[in-house]
Image (cartoon, rainbow, N blue to C red; front, side, top):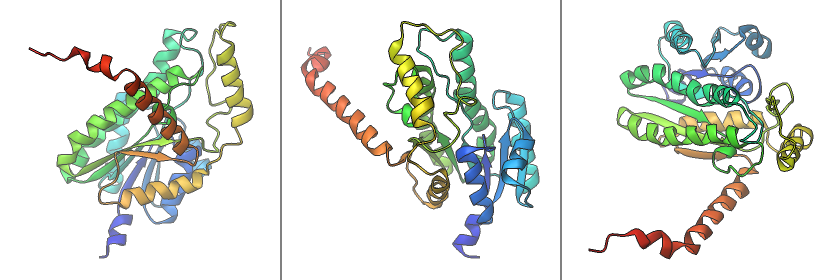
Length: 285
């Protein structure tokens, strides 16, 4: 049995797979012979988007329901006998200036984007540790590294939170032979920014003109004109899963590179500008 055959015996588990990056990844995986369990809040939407396949297990799952997540992961292992690659892709963007969003709006975004992936990790990790192999992809956003977008502060904070626990998770799971990769996508041409996908603030504050401008730019100008192809992203995920030492941090998208370099430059300049003050707290006795 060659290495490539062993690769395609891996079982993938993809959340938020009824559209966008998730759907394109599942289609490509099935085309290459992998077994895939995919989840959505509506199983029918998965079947409509992807079709039926003997190696495909479409599943209803609410990522905010811990018991439901545990049940679905158990069904995946029961069906395929194992689980190898986890893709925490489900998520949504709550638009709105930090002040104008209610506690309920903020909580909902964190429930889906932060705690949802944690539910999946909590119930998948025991299987991965037991088989001493596996790979977890946590899909953040370029907004999980660069957060200076008016109207996207809460969304970005959910992705910064994911980045924090993913770094720790990578260290914790490494002794068990389990890889962890945090993926920061740039702008991909999906429905993510369409008005029926992104959530707008229930009570906008007129004074936040800059937030409304950034909001309008994303919904009316960027949406539909994103520079990256989600189908090509699917190939990238598969290639990363084949690497013996995949990265913990992976930025994807032609627009991601200048944004990352720009943020690093800002931090380096801020550090240099106040270096003496920064180091002034040292105990000298």
